[in-house]
Image 1 (cartoon, rainbow, N blue to C red):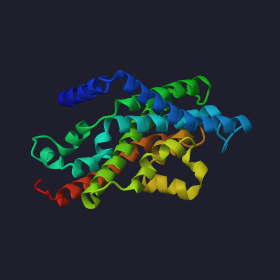
Image 2: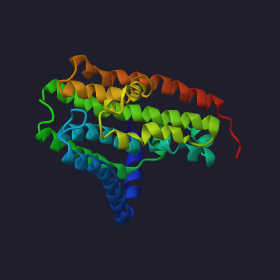
Image 3: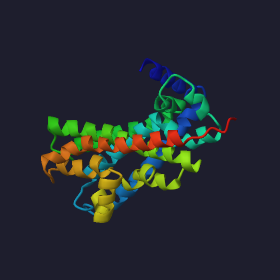
Length: 257
């Protein structure tokens, strides 16, 4: 863990070398996600609710996804950009080092500018809480924290799948972006709004609904209390992700370069 924080410090100091560029990049990230949520604000200015959800509830919904994706993209960027590691013949160097490959890839690349999105998510969350989106209890506060942390873990699993597939394709597959970059757009609404087929895919195939739609039903008093346990259940998704990664590593053949 000490070594991980050492790498984290290196990446942050590197990002702050050109501070103007860093803050402009942060501003760009804020503008992208703000633009996404503004479409919700304009829609709610016209209609009282969408699918029975009010604006504060949608702000809470979007802040959970935004925080989860921001954490994953900030600290697991190495897997998201893994095809570059393979194309530049850097993976051989990682394999001869006396550290876990997953640990080394995690430390290979980080994106501190994503913390700007995390700050935006915190502001939206604070506003939603003050606006009465949820009748809060200690249990609901714990479920909200689990939704964000387990959501980040699920997105990490998505990145891990994308990286594992690179062993077979040598290039990243854009289809993975549907489940990694896509939620920043369609995660502004609870996934049930998009219909039952989409909800089933995001529950049993890519378990994003387990950290967003179903726990939200508990927070909004629309579903039973056991929905609040589903974020923890979503962590089971990391098992096949890890197995696919190990399969990819065994499949890897060095070019010798």
